[in-house]
Image (cartoon, rainbow, N blue to C red; front, side, top):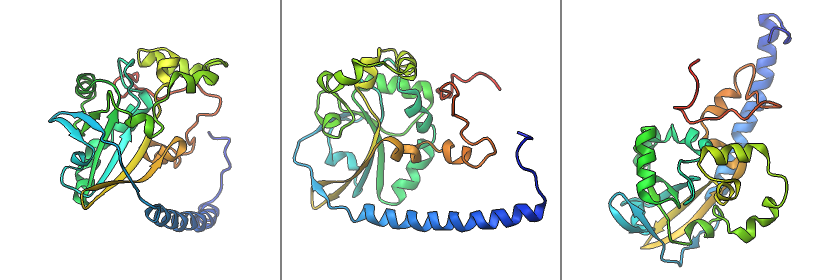
Length: 243
């Protein structure tokens, strides 16, 4: 690290002020994008989805729990998994604290997966989480929102060279690569108005980095994410070695 450019406090301040202008522009652009998200057209949900919850079977409308907005994280925990995805799990470590603040702004937050509810409950106990988590097992919900995939859809990927990280993550979830990539992460938002549920927003891939609260922090330290040409490092919080 000491091979990095070294300068005076005055040089640092000049460079920091120049960077600050770029950071302010990024913030302003972020505000504009947030407005564009809110202006997306709403799509009414016409399917009667059912979910298994800690309080019994519920409809999508009932998941709002008396609020008008619902934010659902599609957590990778498929029927073939014995444990949740380590990457999804790393983000989930921050959800407990966020829930009351979201509730205070008329937003219900929960996770949804295709694994049976009892398996999700057991994993929550292992990880020490308390946020709501529901099972969409037996419904088309995950498929309709592009986070679960059929064997036919996966065939082109599985017939090629499987990246080592996929094999690693599959093993960590107690399944094979085919079982692992049958699921994907996502974040979806819904609104409830006059008894009708509307889909308002979804994001996937790098749009989900907001769920990994440690990434913005790593972006602000000298080594950054330090992931180039490095082994895949993310683990569940109870699997890191001390130090």
